[in-house]
Image 1 (cartoon, one colour):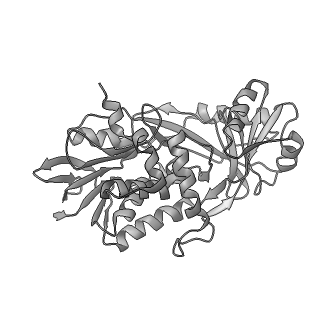
Image 2: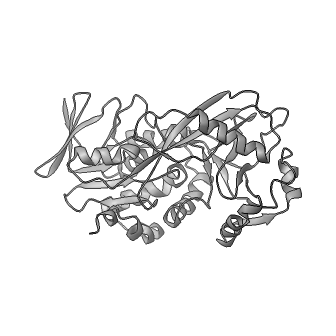
Image 3: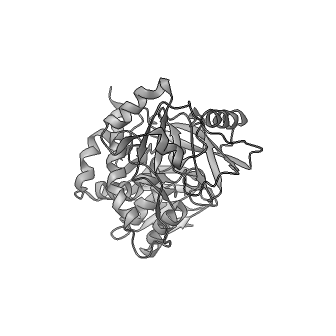
Length: 370
């Protein structure tokens, strides 16, 4: 089987889906996905909270630009709860007061808050753990599944196609087009390939005969616990100022806890590590008086970083028609509306607006210098 498109996007997670949806009005797009489910590895395992003060400067620009989409989404978004407010509390034990000062010093909405106020919001707080605290008040939970499905739906409505269970096995430039041969027996041709393969981004590049960028997939482990007798539905997200653990409400009555681990991994269907689960619970219990009788569920996901931890969006310089859209780390969901629009504008040669200011910083060719 073979077919001709304007663009082949490799990877149907949130990055690939937003790019396909934003290109759909002017390009016929094929989304090629190795798994049976789009977004299986990373998008489907997101912590699902929008935090302005998260990530490097380029990420924060896109996070801020995406905010209005979440608060005022299109009518056909598919949910009434795309964004639900949830504050973030930053706890600083004595050795982390410098980290808290740095967060507040960014002047991006984190303010000092008294420990008495924290105790009122989080009654499980253990007296003496923190000497100071901060609060970020404009954060919110995101409905990741609704967001992802919205963009996949938009891409299909524009005439695009989603090919699940089709891992790219050959990517070859022939004349003015790329040929992508998949494990499903398809050969998809297009003048342009967008590499939105997440943890597999460097692998896709190698298949295409290109040098890798040096992407580093990292495991992030999480566990679900029952915090009874505490009622946690309206708790803020609670984390250390140094970001070495956090908890957030899950399914109204449970807590998700993580040690914020970033263990380098080869790209695969990553599974949780029992030691990391135990470390996360131990760090939480130093701060919160919550008895953990059992871990109800645990999982892990891959967060993939570029060598300098900033985004890598832009054209490959050694061959025409190959565009990188990788290195989203743990920020891909909260930046998605703005990131997809930026990438589409770059591909079409249009003015990307305020997001254009970050293009020099996110050029993937910066890793090829020298």
